[in-house]
Length: 57
Image (tube, rainbow, N blue to C red; front, side, top):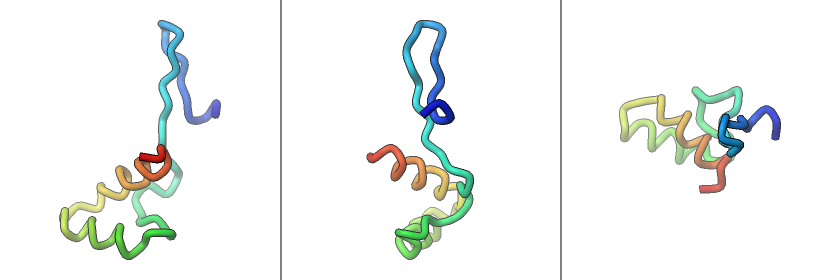
């Protein structure tokens, strides 16, 4: 968890959700991710999809 969280000055912990393959569709949801990126006309959406999946939302 130490690579994915930051302790803030006030003592609270901020969780960061990411992986090293942010600019690609997720293998487990490849077709869905590609369709969403195509509809949005923006491949940056992969970063958000991966973060959402990692966070459990």
